[in-house]
Length: 637
Image (spheres, rainbow, N blue to C red):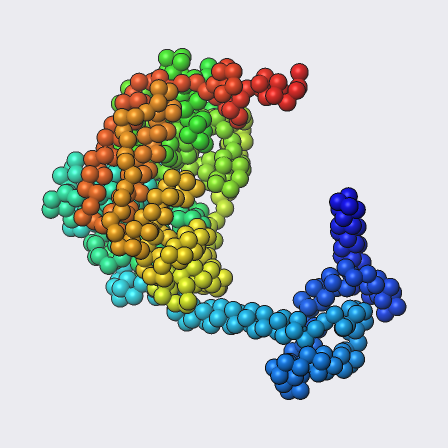
């Protein structure tokens, strides 16, 4: 019996598949009525034909006409299905389109039509709400986006654009101007760069505060401030402002912060440092603001040349080299190979705390380290005494896919070679093809056409929910020359938060906390923090372990780096919700950084090994097991 039943299901499934094929072919070929009637004989065909038909505009028109008839509506409400069915049948006699396709019109009941009509009404209400929300958003957005910053529009600002390649002295000249001002603010892309300016100004007896998303350090009598660009206070006035690496306006993830800084910083004198490809875009922003500007062009202080010698790793590594890879794992792997040959290495990559990166950079600058092994984190404003930049990889994973390096990325990283005053020239090379690098560096840079803008905080109270408002903002048009930044992550976090509260301000503040939402433990922390605020109870923070690390140096570094991310998360929470608590965070972060610095100073990174047999793996091996174990596992000899 079971086998027969199973066979019947298989036959029915095949019938459905045949129906789909016949249905679409009938639409394309416009078969005759006689041919259609032969196709729709079997019950499965009838059933599926109705499901398809009720999605069509003709069908909607038919039953909307039905429901508008008083006779049918009265019979349906009075509970007389015989009368309503008869009325439907009479109507269907006048509807040849429906009759020809369905074949068996008796199976379409009035109840089914009423259900479908109510469903259409619900859909129409959703569409209407969305259209109303869209109109409200458009009404709130001014015709000119700079008008989102009325305080900046009320003052006269003058921009000085420092345009030039890397190692051309753009930032140096801008900072010198800021030093001469009574009050000033530096806005950089990385907390490491903000920390460098903070240290430099205080060392020169110019009191300066440090304010980034991860830490704050206040100096007595300070009238200057070094910050990451996202931390710009739009309600504070400064005599001079410096916006560094302004070509980032064209970045879909973070570009909105640079656009907001250019449009909204409250300073009569604004210095903007940027690459040549962003000049037209930034000028358009300034012109939209109706501010004045001047352009100062900078040339590279030292020539940047292609090293035509063939490079072989690790034999060709020389003192003063910067070896570039694009993952933490590969940084450790390359460093372990070099350390095994007696080459002392400084390590710089994104997961390292900023003070650790600063210490590693200083180690290379003092000559304590022979080479620096780094990711593209080195390309953003870090001035190191690098003689030659060597690319050990020509692709990177950008969070979505593994892709070749863009020309502007190659230009930015290679440009770090040849620091003025230390080397007479800068060199670049590759383990693959130095000529391809040369072509990329000398190619005409692609102009940045549009500046990205973030979701305006002024819209967070528009509409029925914040996530829906954000979605509609993502669909509305913006002014020419602008593009909306990627807020899919913020929308997803807002939807999660809306399951527990309808407080718009609380949802927005949690949705915009910067953390790695792909990290399960950090995501759990975010959830627990949200619940504590919704219930108005103190957050019970996780225990921070500093002394419990693995014997393997790379594994121990991974544990400590993650603990530092936990502290960063606690700092965000403290700053936004409970500023009187968690005063110990800065001390704990310093302790973690000290442990990381001590581990790196040992110069004993372990080589990568096969997790199955323990055999050493090449530094650039993509998998956790060796080829031999892989072949044995899959029966390949």
